[in-house]
Structures are given as C-alpha cells and as structure tokens.
Length: 180
Image (tube, rainbow, N blue to C red; front, side, top):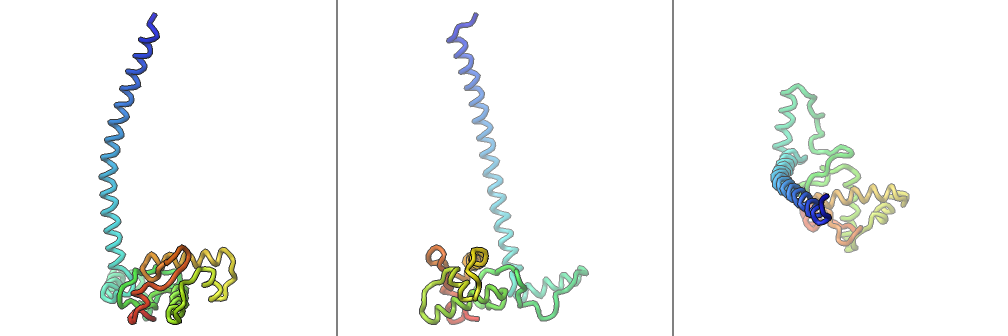
C-alpha cells in the first residue's frame, strides 16, 4: 500500500507535467497570436488604402472606377450623381478641398448648424440641442440617431467632440476653405 506522501508526490509530479505542457501550448499560441496580429494589421492598412482610393470626391479615381464598371458590363453610375452623396452613404475622411455636398443631407444639416454656431461665436452643441434645432422630438431614438451621425463625423475628421457629448466643427473644416 502506497504511502500518503508517495501519493502526494505522484499527484504533484502529474500536475507539474501538465503545467509544463500547458505553458508550452500557451507559448505556441502566443507566438501564433503575434503572427496573426501582424497579418491583421496589414489587412487593416490595406483596407484603409483601398478606402482612400475609392473615397467619393476623388475625381480621377471616380472616373476610372465608372469606366471599369462599364467595361465589365455592370450598370454605370447615373449621370450627374458622381459628386453627390446618396442617403445613408459612407462619410468620407475630411481632407482639404472636400466640400460638404459629398455628404448626405442629414450630415450637411449637422455641419450647417454647427457652422452657424461657430460663426456666431457660440459653443459646442449636444445632440439634444441639435434635435431641437432640427425640430425633432427630443426622444431617445432621435437623439441617439443624431449622436451616431455626430460620432461618425468626429471619426472622419469633420467634427470635434470637445467634451463628452458636445460637438463642434473641426478647426480645419471651419476654416476659410472648409465651408459649404
């Protein structure tokens, strides 16, 4: 009959072996994670570059894309709509020379209200105040929809969130060339 100490030593040895196996597996997974993260970052960069190339408002890239589509037999873009955004369209990253008309009407309204406040020397607006400016009912659904749009404009460089929930035009957008 084995002794209690012998049984404990056996269990300790088994636990130690299992711990070593798990550490080796964790090291292997960590090395694999580093490789996958590197690949992920490369995909993010590639996607960003493709987004820059395909961003609306770039006349050279836009005309080539339309020609490519017509060569493949896809439906061409409707005439006169190349520079005008459609409702629920993607918000492009702000850059010098990009006009407000590339944005959908809802985004243009937000920029116009904030530009008016900026021109009058008034401070930033909350989404609830924006809803009131637009004549919307101050219900959570409407306010959250405005907040979502404002946050998207912040992420794309059109607006600045000076304090949590308070939005104003970015300095570059509010500058002399940034108007509508």
